Image 1: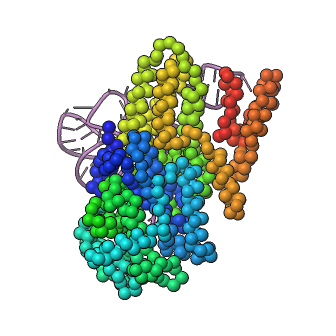
Image 2: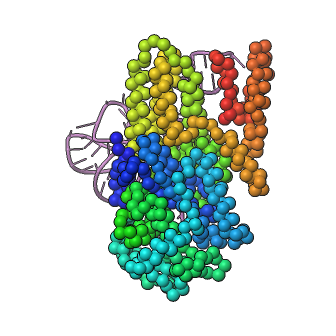
Image 3: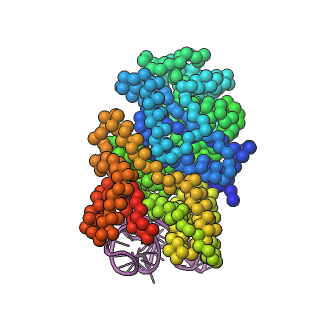
Length: 493
RNA sequence: GCACCGGUGGCGAAGUGGCUAACGCGUUGGUCUGCAAAACCAAUAUUCGUGGGUUCAAUCCCCACCCGGUGCUCCA
């Protein structure tokens, strides 16, 4: 079965097949490190993570490059406002970005490429373009890409160039261009801004050039897939194509993967509406990282998704169900005797469905549905004590495949929440920490065990009032007790 | 204005020209339990925005309309 993916370039489904040595060469536009990442950013990175995890599950090797944009207007503005050197400022937010990615279980790309560490490559690329007059120097010392030299401009986004009239929207500081559509590849130095001395003259790179230069540096002129948020399609990716293909005269990325924006509570996320959330905001409100991950992955990447707090609590319940089942399967004893043919067949069928769903443009919603089908069937069989070792192994294999993609079964939420709390305390943001969180996090496993033991003793003496009081108390601290036949088990909610 | 995407049960969300319209959450009743929790069972859409059309047959194709969202400018 092919891994079929929608290719924005050409707007059609297409099997994703690495061009050589079974290695998927992919580039993903990373963050501009000027602030903490918000959930919209992470929806994109999360779906790219699913793509890379699934490609690997299917046996591909990965060479995934992600850039860090560590010089741009917003960075310069914010660093100046914070009275910090740019390098120090970007280092802080790059670190925060990766902490957040780790918290959400997003795997690190094989190669992280920083714009400021690849200035030479960008300059060389601009020079190549300049040699053929595809890039030109304006009077103020900035360099621009001459769109007139690239007839295919617009092939990705389907933009009609006629619609972008000359002179329609001209930046105040970009009055030197030959055509309004031309975009900056190198920006002349302005007072007080970061600047590099180069053969092009002093200045800093334009936004688009870094991705072209770094992608080609690490992946070659042509590579398998380029990913990013839908907003980057135009102009960013269009410009990357123009720069890269003008220089190499080869196809740049063969496959383009764009993740749609999300809405928050039905509206576009924006600070002015007040529905703008960073990962840290949510963590401090008491939402678990795994739940956020699962919710952001529950709607397939090409669909707009509406992020809501109701959705968050639903995802929380769904994860609880999955984890409970995974624990149950892990602890189950295989039954001797005849295999349950219906169950075995169902597991095989749903395992196939799981893969078929992901192979069909990474349909995460359908993939998780297949797993839930097995959760119910498995629970029924487990209740009936009619599960063979073979079926248990098959169910565990499906859960493992599921978790290789979704990565929510193993509970690492407390440590992630604690890290967010520590950060808030360090940054003087204590007010943001939900009060009940401190309560929850402060109780240790040993405390819980002691109370559980005391409650069991109370129960044995049929002192149910005491037993229930302990249970209620623990529940307030986020600990749920379950009295099973084999004894009491507990979990943090 | 131009372009694009979507409108499926109480909520979220798959899906298909024709078998009982997945799955999750929620709600109600039941089993289990000292009571809970977990798990299971049952009930929760004669119906897929509205109006036309094509077809033996449409939620799925076509047209119009209404509603929501997005892009066209920095943005994941």
